[in-house]
Length: 225
Ligand SMILES: Nc1nc2c(c(=O)[nH]1)N[C@H]1C(S)=C(S)[C@@H](COP(=O)(O)O)O[C@H]1N2
Ligand SMILES: [Mo]
Image (cartoon, rainbow, N blue to C red):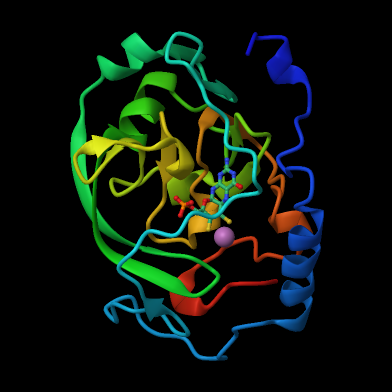
């Protein structure tokens, strides 16, 4: 994918998947799976969730196959130092390991995932967000977008993952690299990430404009909003 291609709005919805998107939008309108309860973060399983041991794959059917020599991770927008890291440069950054639980809005949770990758704080320290940067939009190679406040990503538990359970992250789970924001529902964790855009204003992403909650806190059951 060339740099100019990245400016084209891509459609992350694969042919034939439009009905699935429409159904999920309908579920959002109906408030499906909402139990109407909240829990403090010390409660391990958020309200309405059930534990699974497999690792389901959820996306819109476009699973880009990014060759490492074409891969880039940009951190740009309201930053002092724009980053455009290639695969080699990205892998030269300090690597850390995280173990966390993940929670999908479709009500499955998976405990004790181990990941390796580069910390959000490492990337943000390099890029130096400007004082007016308050929000992030993540842009992915399939055209998917999702948004969070900068303070939701600028936390030690957030990272760009390249490995899951000590194996390179598979393509279906967002390899070569994906965002992981474990304290929010998993739709905020962009797979196949290529651009981290810092902004002054909040810009809702793919699911956020289709009825999903802007904040996505599983313990507050912010599924839809
Ligand atoms: N690029 C991209 N990232 C994405 C999505 C997507 O369609 N495209 N789907 C999101 C949703 S809705 C979920 S639940 C998780 C699923 O991640 P998994 O397939 O690794 O379980 O990815 C999120 N990240
Ligand atoms: Mo999802």
